[in-house]
Length: 322
Image (cartoon, rainbow, N blue to C red; front, side, top):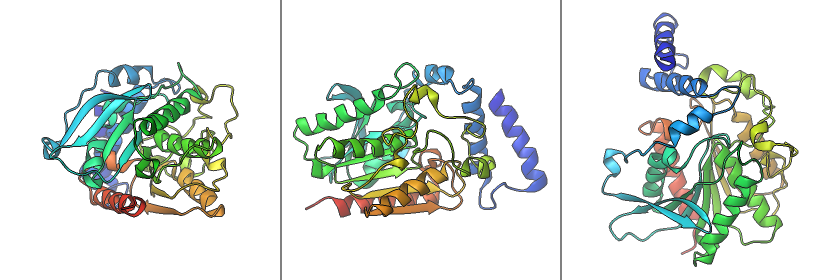
């Protein structure tokens, strides 16, 4: 009901005042409205218990154009369960992607990201493992990071060369992937070939001005939220393993960062990239000016998504040695 009401209200607004972003079609704008209404209806004071219960029942099929091309099967890497996405047909994989899903560290699972990761694996000519890492509030920091480390080292234990591994993640998963990079370096583990981040969540204090500046053009319910204490617990919210934009990036392998110009946590990406550039790291930032949070997973047929996947594929090629 909340979704229907929100869509009716936005329809009336659009008829009277036009699209909230001039380039947004009806389909794009209604999808943003529906996502926000769904998230807000399933969250009470930031607690997404209802949303997690709903997500636990999800078992989405792959998009029609990927059926028969990508196989999704359960698996375990290290001690962490998850889902493998493997291209069918005897293809040679360029690399292995360890994908960390988003959800503000309090929701999400491999099923919620199945369609997007399947497309990412297909378009980048890779195989991908989506880790079902522990989430808050039942498992606050450092549970998610411990699981990500376990999974990464598990890949290496099975014989996968670090030089053929790429980290990837969206939102909280993007922040987690960045935190994992810092921890791998600090503990002197071998680093992956590179990292792809989609709208990374790197500031768990929620201090960015873009939270308020882009409130009307995104679907995240963060405008009046304080720090993400569900995940942080009693830890320092500015610890680089929690809010990676505060990290030192010396010695980190290349990163590709995508951000939406209309998303609420745009500043998370901008400040992360600035820190990496400060430390001399090879990092590329691509801002899709009219896009919102993690748009490739929300509008899979949009031209901006096609550009994002194509650049991701090029990045994989550039980072993987022959």
